[in-house]
Image (cartoon, rainbow, N blue to C red):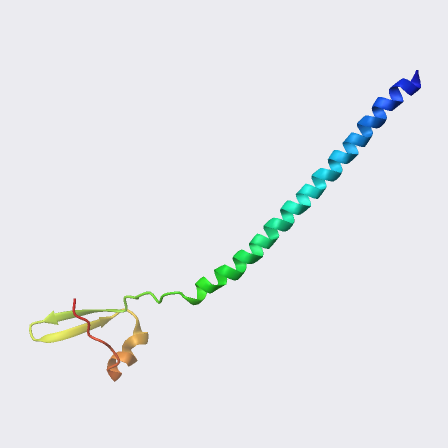
Length: 92
């Protein structure tokens, strides 16, 4: 009688071990695949940082008062460039 129950439990035990093994193998494959994709993404995303465009920054305001032109600086770091004449005039 005990032999009759031993065979189904043995088959069940073998099936459980097989399913655990295949699942762990599948999970390792998925993790490796995503790690490779992450490494590829890091390599490709690094090139985007090199091509950053320099943004414009508001550092002062220019006013015209009758015949005089007044420049109000919000950032004192550009004062030297203005005094040395290092600027461009752009028409719209």
